[in-house]
Each structure stands twice: as structure tokens, then as C-alpha cells.
Image (cartoon, rainbow, N blue to C red; front, side, top):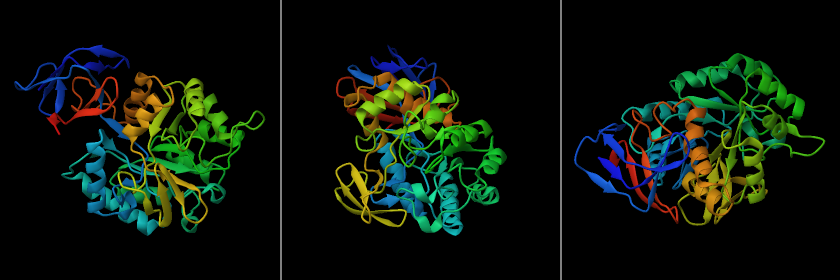
Length: 373
């Protein structure tokens, strides 16, 4: 297959009109057949990678079934998210074990978007900043518990979230540095505590601004510590609900587009109509893009997929297109260590390509592992 006349997103994070050659599943120097796609009027971007979301189409990753995972993978692929790292919620170890086993089993012969990892969002979090997490199952950071779950997941857990102020958290970070990406999340940590966690080996912030102290001029907190550390990356939900557009623009100025990772944090209502749904065993009310807990109105994830979040960042928040693509495709792949196969349109990588209308950013075609969907 050969794609011609597209403006192609390059390794330098710019757009250049050039041919893309595909042989079998991979980007190559020459095409493997005579198929030619004329992509005039389109931009070609890598398939996106969502490293933090919970579900869609009425299914949650934590349902822990093959049906749920397959429904999620199919929906994500149909929307140009070609690799996925779905997130768990705060549950007991038995439930998390079942989820990990289901994910590991799915990888064998999987279809739809590639399941490339698990984001373990709970249960090592702060009760005071639980957000939509179930307080019943909050657990102190436990290295051995994590390693048991990682074994059941066959090494799929790529990120583990924790509140660094909780008992045992610093030792947890020191013990697991290098084994998994350690992310500060659902936390009351002040600047010094967050900075210490980053010095010890944490390198990631879960859904920046949400479920953490606010950034102020005398108490910069987690946000200030993250900005200060040049190796720390931050997740950002650009669904138009979680974060004001001015704050999104300010965040890009503070972190630069090398350290921002766009996520959707989507829940099971994504792709469906308004109504009553569930997240982490708790009732959620969804109207438009806004999902809130029935019990107290807390924002409970989003109802927007990552491709739509990327469009929103560009079209409604003023983020340059190249930066938005970088933060939705390149940076997440690098973050969880899969950039050797995903995240850019480069020779030797999987031919996962999305063609977007250059004016509207509407999806025109999706090529996944060298085949047009």
C-alpha cells in the first residue's frame, strides 16, 4: 500500500507532504502491493495511544471480561485510537486480580486496538482526594501486592498511581523505580512531599489539576513540583469539562509539548446517549460530555474519546495541531515504553495511520497494521 499527497506528521513533529509506503503490517521503504490511497486534502497522523481511560459503549475495563475488553478495543480503533492502556479503579485485590488476568488473556490473538498496557489507578490513593474512586477499597501502597498483580497481568501494568503522602508510599516508589511508571495521583501532597516523590523516582502526574491541591502562589503543591522537575510528565484531559481552555494553554506554556500527555479518562458512557451509568461500582449521571457521581456531583471521568479530546484542544483551546498530535500519539507511547513500535509514522513501526481532513480534522480513513478499516 502507498499513501500519496497527504501532509504527513513527521518524527520532527511537523507536517510534510510525502509518500507513506506500507508493506504487510509495517511502514516500509517501498510498498508491498499496488494499492494506492490518494489522501489529497488530508493530514496523516499516527494512530493515537490512550494511557488513561476506563471504558466506552456501556463497558468498563474493570468488568474484567473478554466481552468488555473487546468492545472497548473495537470502539477505540474505530475512532483512531490504535493502542490502549486502560485504567483500573479502586477495588480489592481479588477483583483487581481478575481484571489483570482478563487483560493478559486478551492479548493472545487480540483484535481491535492493541492492548499495550494497564494503568493501575487505584487503590493506593488518598481518601481525602478519592474523586470518583470507591473509598471502601482504598489501600496503603503495598509493593508485594503490586508485584502479585503484575505477575497476574503478565507484566502488562505500565503505570501505577499513588498518593505520596500516604504511609509506605516513599518506600513503594524507591522499590519500584525502574519496574513501572510511578504516577502521583488522588493526593493531598504539598510541594515538598511531591518533590521528594519525584526525586525518589516518580515521573508522572495523573490527570493534572484533578484530585490534587490547587496551584497557588504560596502553596504550589504537586503542580508546582511537577513543573520544576524537567523529567516529569503530566496527563491532561481536554474534554472541555475538566479543565478551562485558558488553563490548558497555560499548562502547555509551563510544561511544553514534550511533557504533556493528552488522555480521555473516558468511562462507559462514551459513545452512547445521555443517561445513568456506572464507574467503579458507583452510579454516574451523564449529560453531554459531563459525567458526575449521583451521590455528590463529583466529576466522574469523561464521556469523550481521545481523538475528540485532541480535536477539542486544537479547535476550542488554541493548541497548535502539531503539539496536540504529539501529546496524543508520540508522548504517551514514549511514556509507557512502546515508541519502538507505535507513536510515529516511521519505517519499521506498525502502519497505524489516521487520515484527517486538514480543515475540519474529521476522520477520513484509518489504517491499522497496514490494512484499511
